[in-house]
Image (cartoon, rainbow, N blue to C red; front, side):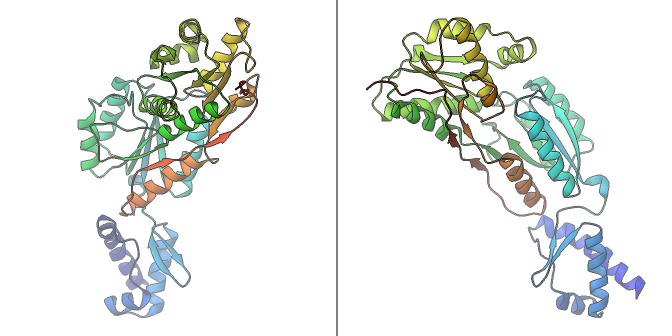
Length: 361
């Protein structure tokens, strides 16, 4: 009997791989397995217990046995993560969430940083081709542009790697799975909030070379247009990855100083690409004796720890705690189990603090 249940377990392991390829996530019932292998229920249960101990299935009382998505060979249960940054701000907590959740599911993790550079991204992709990971969570580099690295993404996918893009997507990989912020509606929500506080001339500063920046800008502009407000391109500022890198590494705020001098004339409020930009903008405004919110109101995205460090405390858009990592890992696991999943946009909610003042009507 001991030989028989092990042999059945080995056959079921092969069946698991075939089932995942066809999107079948549930094993046959114990009764069906008894008939299939012409053995007793006790032998089938021993086989299933062995698979459960190896993490290949989960058994639910009264429901059945389900594929976890893990492969029998542990070395194949690898997930690679490519992020654009490893600096402070949001990335350490996001990465910790992803690693913790994947490890809990039995996957080992390799982490790479692209610094939002296409050439670095390509080097990482090339390093994965010979031993492709089971899953790949990738934050696009300069996502506002089509990627010249599409060939390597397609090659990885053809070799069986399940790819999920995080925070953005590439226009020339349209069928890719993507988990991102609902940036358009976020920009619209912030614009609407400032309009409700009777701000008439509102400025904005966004990241030029990412899809997040472009979508956030678009949402803000549409909120103004739908309210019948005049849109002044002279009040919109843009920054690039290079300028953001200099800000983070050297506290180089020249682009923010230029933005204040060139874009904020007569504006009573400004929407910032994220809390990091808002935090440094408020510092530069204070050096110029421009006070927030008395002289100008400031809002932003992400609801990070910088909202509490800023003076005044920042009004910002937030997600539920750990939501980005939870959704990303959940969809990746389903994809690796063979299930059909769709891209998702995570909604924002507004967290109001004291960086906004109501203007006189």
